[in-house]
Image (tube, rainbow over all chains, first blue to last red; front, top):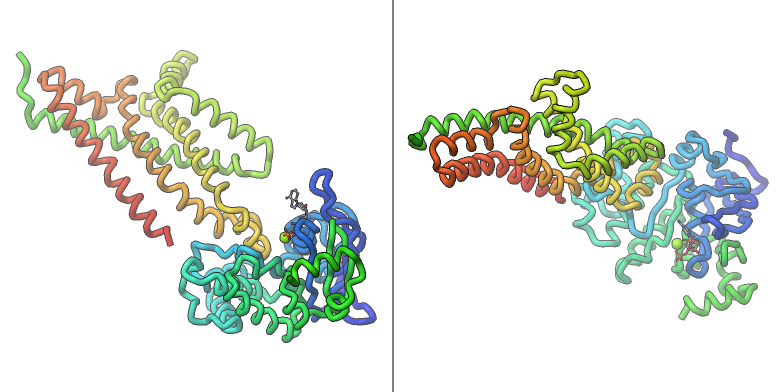
Amino acid sequence: MSSIERTAAGISVVRASQVCKYYGGFQALDHIDLNVEKGETIVVCGPSGSGKSTLIRCLNALERHQSGKLTVCGVEVNDSRQSVDAVRRKTGMVFQNFNLFPHMTVIENCMIAPMKVRGMSRDQARATAERFLARVHIPEQADKYPAQLSGGQQQRVAIARALSMSPELMLFDEPTSALDPEMVREVLDTMVELAKEGSTMICVTHEMNFARQVADRVIFMDRGSIVESGAPEAFFARPETERAREFLAQILN
Amino acid sequence: MFQQYSLAHVQFMLTGLGWTVTLALIALVGGSIAGSVLTLMRVSSNAILSRIAQFYIFVVQGTPLLVTLFIAYFGASYVGFAVQPLVAIAVAFSFYAAAFLGDIWRGAIQSVPGGQHEGAHALGLSRVAAMRYIIIPQAIRIATPPTVGFFVQLIKNTSLASVVGIVELTRTAQIVSNATFKPLEVYLTAALFYFLVCFPITLFSRRLEKRLNV
Ligand SMILES: Nc1ncnc2c1ncn2[C@@H]1O[C@H](COP(=O)(O)OP(=O)(O)OP(=O)(O)O)[C@@H](O)[C@H]1O
Ligand SMILES: [Mg+2]
């Protein structure tokens, strides 16, 4: 496996070149080129069905691309077991529907992967989990079950669970879309803190205030392609394409 | 000419109950082991294994237990294996139970939402670890009520063992009823005995469900 590649600007975390993904005959990703460097926060937006989820799911090998070259955290993503294991160990993912394990307490949710994947002892894993639960501001919920928490709290547990594996890249797939409006803020605040602490993050979200606040770049997708990519101010003020203008007009109203 | 229905008869039926419990244990243990194997085959990513298991389930579920038992006992001796009745029963019941348990457990595993697999895999858990720590514990909760229902069914089906000469509860009741001509009292006693065996299992399953249901 190749080591982490250095570019002129910094350390490359994601390098996608001409990546294509098909579902049967349907092309969900159409020659994607993307570079993400260490410490960057990227916001991905675009209409429903444009391939945003597909893109970030290819990054941690939950979906497999069929052509093109994809390197994530220094690992070339391919069909080999080692590649898939390595890339998943180095990335964390937060889902729209949390996907917490309902039969485990909050802290157990955060301990299972460090113990079974990293081989940490129970005490070590507990200490790590407690640290990350404190970081997402819910240390007191450690011994509850997910079903006993509010949606916002559950999503913060999911963030802590992903962080407890110390990922080099965090992937977020519409982390606030399933939440009641009053809980969106607490999850976004947590994500803003992460971004400001220098985490590398790729976030599929339509929360444009979040994008304005912390995104280094906004990527706009449509029909499986990256149509625009630029700094948030420029993207919001002067979208270059008609499709992006229509999309912004829709979500900003 | 008819005997009085007496304590001695009840004691005789208790020996029958002993056999019924023994048969049930054999069926439960054998069926669970074979059912686990079948479940693993069914959910494995190997298409051939999965197909074989599917075919097995299809055939055995469609065969009455009595016929399966006849095949294991009379069929086997016909082709030259002199099998003990108890062995024939163990084999027939295990094969029969496996076909149902394999299906119930596969269904339970597959009804755990896909998001649970994704959550586990995104954390780097291997397929085996995801199964063991995330999927199977949740599947057990889902599978408990139908599994217990099937176990109770299986216990009652042990009465079929009388056809290969095992004097279990139903058979003893028949004998006593013929001797005393008190069918109502005798069969009510037998029903009570079956209930006493099945009820604790149902109770245990409720307890288990409550404990697993968090
Ligand atoms: N498992 C699948 N099988 C077949 N088609 C799929 C599958 N997953 C996604 N697609 C299709 O691929 C396209 C891209 O889907 P994707 O989920 O990436 O879109 P999205 O941009 O995340 O949309 P949304 O905003 O609705 O989440 C869609 O047209 C979708 O129907
Ligand atoms: Mg999506």
